Structures are given as C-alpha cells and as structure tokens.
View 1 (tube, rainbow, N blue to C red):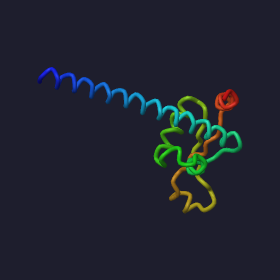
View 2 (view 1 turned 135 degrees about the vertical axis):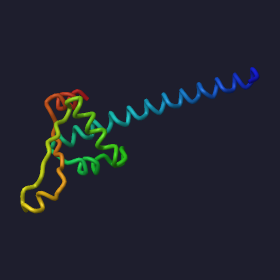
View 3 (view 1 turned 90 degrees about the vertical axis):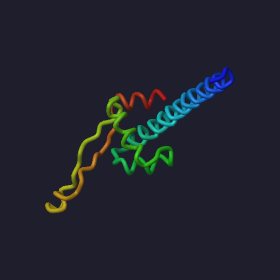
View 4 (view 1 turned 45 degrees about the vertical axis):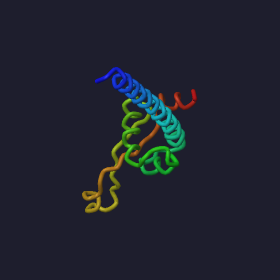
Length: 114
C-alpha cells in the first residue's frame, strides 16, 4: 500500500466513523423526542403500543416502538402490565397477551422537567 492509499484509507475511515457518530446523535435525539411524546400520551391515559405508535407521527418505525418501550421500562419511566381481555373464555385462551403501558412517578417528573 502506497502512502497515498494509506492516507486515503485513513481519511475514509475517519469520515465513516464521523458519520456513524453523527447518525448515533441523530438517533438519540429522535429517541428522546419519541420518549417525550410517549410520556405526554401516557400522562393522559394508559395505552397500548399500537396506540402510542399512532401518536408518534412517523418518528419511529413500527418495530422500533417495542425497543423504545422496553428501554423506557428499564429506566422506570413507564410501567407495562400484561393484559388479556376476559370476555370470551375460548377467545381469551387464543388471544395474545397485550401490554398496557402507564406512566410512573419518575416518568411524570421527567415530563414536567422538559
């Protein structure tokens, strides 16, 4: 490898690392914005993931909502409880469990601080 190839490779690697860093910052900002929207929605009433996704107005891809909610649960901003509707006993056994999310006291304080 010549000196010019070495310099070109080093510059390309630096640009790649910089773009990865900037994309990471943009993703973190988007996640913070989504967290604020989720907290605001849950402050009004508990909701399911699909309801929260509808309120996010395309800030997240549909499969990303569950990752966001899991992170928020880990940080104790929200609480998710498993819920199965008990109307029909047969349907109750077949229906998948759904998680109903609500805001915690910490989540409410964080929302108020924003």
